[in-house]
Length: 373
Ligand code: DOR
Ligand code: ZN
Image 1 (tube, rainbow, N blue to C red):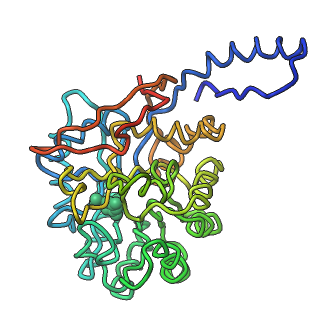
Image 2: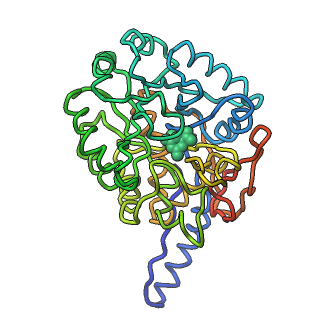
Image 3: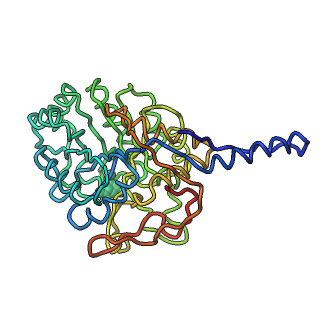
């Protein structure tokens, strides 16, 4: 990153103050432009078919690479399926856009150890995604008991394959706001103990407990953080009525958890990196009596992160979080080109085409402070 945001100190209006403020205003102009190494999105839902064609370009415009989630119907469970999906993604991109989809496989009770070896050899497939069965959208084929996949986790550990974890318990009796913290305490602790060399990414962390766990874990345990969990808390879902476009899983938590996530994101620890979890659903399936989980953010993802970092005076930490730490975790080179953000107020569209339907973005009704050039 070339430029730094400047915070003006509140000092008495001495002659020195005027000198200081002259110098600061020159710097402030500079700080209105932010150049970053092109970032990567290490957690993304692109869907398939017409929906894929509607959303892929948004991510490809901002990011060099994205780790694409496998929760299609049917789920992407084999390397052969992932490679075919990768081709469909590449064909759906706008012409001339350089973007690399990084693929994942959906872990099920029936995944075989041979598939782990194929992933390790594939190059294009970077991780397995662990969904506890029933935890979230299209997770019916997920793992019903950790013990069912112990052989596969052992193979992943041996081959150095990454395990991406949706960290929530699924017992319907467990309060939805407690599901991540209980998963961390019960399941994640156990997996990290039983597979001490397994490379793990705890996806879309939402709690202080998860952030603390990852901070204290060995270096090969990391976490992604979404823009919505850095910017909003659970009250946002209920402000003036029910706001379905703020509903995702794991659900937004209390303010104290949001603060812990911001601390982790700006900490400079390479364990925490960008993963939007942008998850488009048609407007009709969100604005209904039983709405789908997922926030769509890929049209303005980097701007939302810039806002979250800027709000705490840490915009200088964005480059490493967005463009370096994730690539390092996955053993990938940094992207060679850059993107530039301007401090410029703008209002994204209220709605986007989504196949024959539309999507409402998380930013609906909002003005953003940063804009990608
Ligand atoms: O909110 C979510 N939406 N969380 C997930 O884990 C899945 C995602 C989706 O695919 O819509
Ligand atoms: Zn997701």
